[in-house]
Length: 226
Length: 249
Image 1 (cartoon, each protein chain N blue to C red):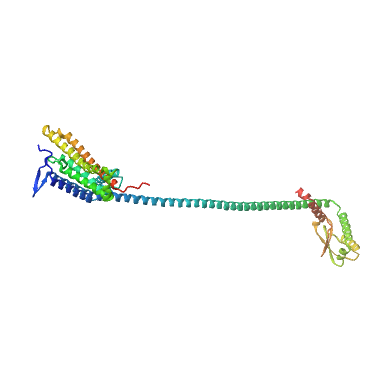
Image 2: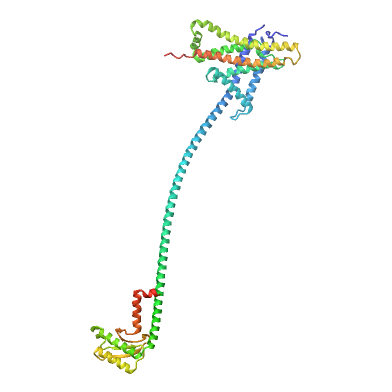
């Protein structure tokens, strides 16, 4: 058995190694984009069942964003919704035999956490300007600046570790049980892995939204006390 | 344990591309469709609200029209009642007038019938009286009766006023008797009249059995009644004036 912490290149594109997680990610991207195109090909005011399902997904994501931010979900919908869909699909791709979920390798969760880190900066600067965003690190007082800066890194790192650890451990456990027990024994663990994958996708998306909202609110102009 | 920075970069770019693609092909069109449906629903609600307002206005107008119709109906009913009352009063007045006219006509007819009956009774009484008188005369002495009536004739001429008696002078006079007078009787009558007039009279003798008994003197302008028929007629007239004949009828 290969170590789950060990990624081997699937092939080389010149000097660049192409890992299996990247190929699976491309496949997931193709599936999601093709599915999106098929779903939105014939949108009508009177929805079909598939259109209703798509609208239910959009409405749910909007509701979650609105509940967390208290603002209009439009600016965050694409990023947060895509994070959730991609992580969910990636986690559930473990059901396909021979496929290792991209989120079970360190690079993908690290890339997702890095994107969240960058998005916190992006939305924070967009909401309150560079000054406002930087002032957010000095709250409640400038003494907290180093801790706040460290926190902004560690919370993204914690997201990376949480997602990677959960998914990797699930895959690892299933692989161990599958190698030791009969064919049907890992099935309950796979079901549990489905639940864990969905929960982790939801947690990652919600935490991303919470951190972005925190940065936006801290950077926003404070009302003057009369 | 290995960590490939190329893979990290690939995955980051992959996710960013996926974010853009799904924004382009999924989140944006679906959200736009939801917004379009909400807008359509809002438009429909606004239209429904406008229609409801229009319907309420139309209902108010209909209620006002209905109230107007009710008032008009009441006015029409009142006018119809008034007209019917007027027609009824007119018909009642006409019926009352017609009834009064019929009553008057019946009363007049009854009075006329009573008068006719009275006249017929009077005539019957006169006829009966004449019959009785005629039968009585038949049992009396004709000469004595003539003499008595001649005396009453002479007395009647004598009772005339001077002007009335002067009318009898110099004209032809008819002496009408109930029975035919022979020459002797005519001479006696001529002498008696000449005596009372004082001048000779030109007399012509006629007979009229309707007189029953008596002599009458007729001139062109004057009739001196002196007969039982005249007496009976006078008595009948007096009785009629006193209502005796009507009671008898």
